[in-house]
Length: 173
Image (cartoon, rainbow, N blue to C red; front, side, top):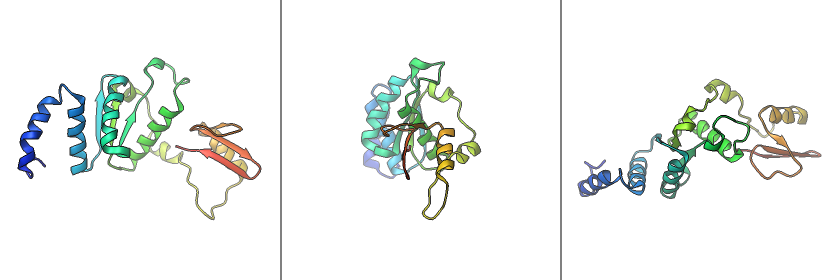
């Protein structure tokens, strides 16, 4: 890219040298690379804080084309106390990667050590709804519970659903 645009070449060299010292320069270079040639880019930081800081800068430049794939470092050996928002984002990122959609993923070492489901199993667990496709309420509620959704009176966060009469509210990913 920089060979095609000579006036940016010197600036790019300076930014590349600075990127080892400043995450904002590194974020700029990554965003420039992605915007010029959309492709999946995965950046692994040492810890959650570093990943969040870089993600904050990149997301300003790339909006929804940048995602944070993170796990809470406080709960290193337990999966029971993970935040539903982080889990939903991880599942969203996995879905984007499986569908081969070009995105920038910022993650950290602990997050990439977390086990993930096999691709086939992951794809089998995706619920899709189509106009005219019939499914009983009981079947749908059973599927939601099997997938880890929680039945609540009022839906306020991811992985929750509410069933009142013939209406089912689902807070999906």
